[in-house]
Image 1 (cartoon, rainbow, N blue to C red):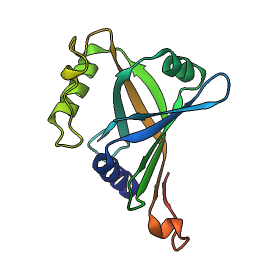
Image 2 (image 1 turned 135 degrees about the horizontal axis):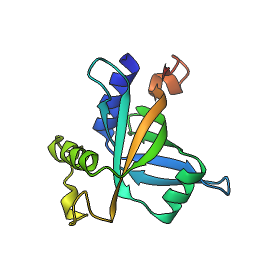
Image 3 (image 1 turned 180 degrees about the horizontal axis):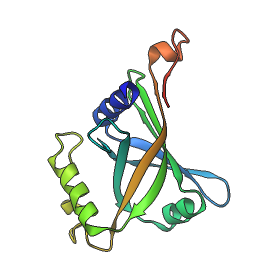
Length: 155
C-alpha cells in the first residue's frame, strides 16, 4: 500500500497527466487529462481513478480496441508517477454524480467544478466518465533517473 499511497499523493499534487491509448492502427495517441484517484475500499484495497471527459470517436475507438491506458504524471523536480490501467466507460448516473461531487469537494488545484464545462450536468449527453483500475504503478524521481536507486513499483 506504500506505493499506492505515494502514487495518490503525487498524482493529486501534480493534477494533470498525459494519458495514452492505442487504437486499431496500433499507433498510440496521447492527451492531457485530469484524473482523480481514491482508495477503492477503505480496508486498504487498491486505487480507482476517475476521468470526466468527452467520449470522442478516437477515445471510444481506442478503448474498444484495447481497454487499457497509461497515465503519466511528471513535475519539474523529476517526480514521476505512472499508472497502467484497465479503463471502462461508466454510464451509471449515480456514480457519475458521486464522482462530480468528489471533484467538486477536492481542494485546489485538484478540485474542479465541471458545471462550467458541462452545463447539462453529470447525466447530460456530453460528459462521459472513465473508471481506471490500475494493474501497475511506478514511481521514479531524480535518484531513480540517475541510477542511484530502483523505482518503486506495484505490484
